[in-house]
Image (tube, rainbow over the protein chains, first blue to last red):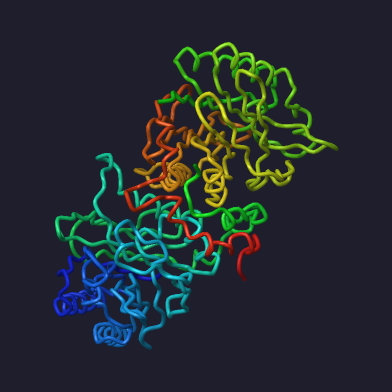
Length: 278
Length: 278
């Protein structure tokens, strides 16, 4: 089994130094708890509630920045995989809502959020590549960011590309839900795990920011689709998850979650435009 | 709002007459409860646990059979939509696991299960067409059958084709789950409803059949993804569901569940073969 940790943190808005200290401490704490994979929230270097691209640009960093260097140092010190969100400075003044996948050898891949939520469209440039699937010491892992999770086409694509664990930095704005229910995003994550036989670990955030409340929905879901750990409190959430299970898509002797697909009938998903029917 | 009813029934294995009486009574009871849509379980005319195609052929019926004629009569009497599973006799000795969509004007469409579960492959021929989306007095409805629901490509396709409600006749074999959790298929249904903003109503079955136990997981889910009604007991489950909500995919001023799709990145879903990566 693989020990996965999520850190449910409250970043300090637009304070790179404070968030650098916060995240380095969070990675160390997870390492001390025996974690092999540690997931940090979306945009944890900067906070979320930007009003414009210009405002975001002031705290946007490259993948070669010292903060990600610190994460890499921590990963190297403990032979850890670190997956965390950052506000990325791109070409020609563009800003991306990005995630770095880091291990002992450094930054292995950067993913730019494909599906921008709501007012993010006024701030960030959307990504233009599918999430990378990265071979690591714990197996093949991948990432999507927050609202991306609500597009089953994307989570399925990542699973078909071989990901055993989907690591999901998020900032889930608090939305209404029935009192006895989990956050809706967690229900969607459980279904994505179950139908794809792939572990899903979501690291959410806390901390009021420009009036916005957050769900605090951090949850680690096994490849069987059941919740292995969840917390609404700040800090560390840890679970031991079997990533070998994700290599075998057989459900019975005669049933296979991937082999039973009928891809000849799914062509419409690509062909149909991204727009609401009239 | 639209009143949807599911009937959680125990069919009598291979007894067409008994199941004819059972289903006609179930439709009448739902009509008396004010239902406008009534969903019956998968293969409710025949039962499920066939050992061979030959055995299934003995109780396979055409869409012009008197049983579906009875369902049509009940639909006409109460201006009702009836969606129920039957063991369908096809061409050249083929047998299909099918669903009929019926309204006051008769049988509007027949859907043949695309994703056959486990030993169904030894009995039935798989369907070769996407589920129909049928305009009815309550709005545009569609159907998938049991294991079909676990393929998010299919439920998404049906939603993109305009379905406001997905009506799901099922026979869910009982599988282990944590004591406090809903059946895994229900979690998958909730996610399908939420990401597609489409109501999902699953009519499951009960009754030990050739040693097989069933989940009894009948659940009606609103277009908001939350459970409106659920029961593990035999009989009628009713909920009032807002199908107008399913016509509007906007989540906020700047977010749209369909408009935010990036279909140019989903092509792999059709291209990738239905097989487990080595």
